[in-house]
Image (cartoon, protein in one colour):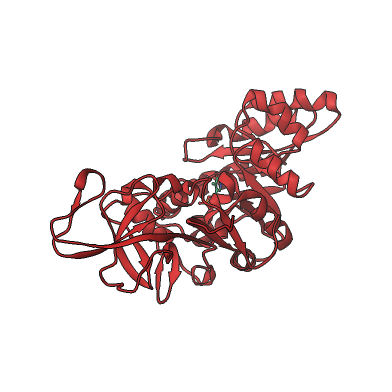
Length: 380
Ligand SMILES: *Cc1c(COP(=O)(O)O)cnc(C)c1O
């Protein structure tokens, strides 16, 4: 059977490669890049993206679970990989065997890793996480020095890094400043006690853009690697936002074209009723592909280089668009859900707004049944 995709994503490897180069230029020498590849590399395909980032010179990977770490190991041995979440008790042995760098928020986690490492005659490198106001992982900043001092006494452990995470870097400079100050206070206290973990980091994508004095010696961009700028209240200074290019485009096809008279109900629930004669295209994508139902009667797609409104409810596998202004549209034509066609572009951010969500959820929401097609180089 000849493969003809009904709904697919294209990933420009050249864009990713260049984005990594721009990020490196932006943060300057002496700052390492940890590329975040959790959730199937933000929906781009973990193995392929990991291979590309290895070739393009990422320094470390950031993952959310051990399956992701294993996938990276299957592509290339020996890449430092930081587990950004807490390891479950049942995962700790595997984490050590995989050589993953765990994140430590408590002395009990550290003790367990030490006990696992000792009989294996190995040293587990760990990064201690400091909660400066995110309230998710990490030791409270006021107790961070004490935790580090306790972890240091445990055998078979090495504190390779210390880090924190911003909760609102894209929106709130004041709160980010408070978080940064708390973190620096911890670092100063440790320094006074003669403790200087070699790797220090804080910045996600938003902070890479607008907290340039807190890059320390490693940054942790996710979204920016894929060429998407985080939405938020703050305007991002500097050229990086112009340099970056989105790597992912998302497509489906027109499967049927028809004209319907005024007064026609369209799709489930009849939430859209035509007010005039309308040309309607049936499209081969729906929420089963990750095109979220929340975009019903709100989102737009590109057909024939023109913006076309999504009409009525988005269903699992199909949806409808108004092609009254695209008279030549016909079955088989590509419709762009994310990306460019002619002079028009639909960005991940715009689609996220229509869905009432954020770009991270749109990208990671593109489902398994959407084939990822890679362009511009070879990947795993
Ligand atoms: C996901 C994640 C990141 C990357 O966030 P972006 O906003 O996509 O850059 C960085 N650090 C941690 C701890 C994360 O969990």
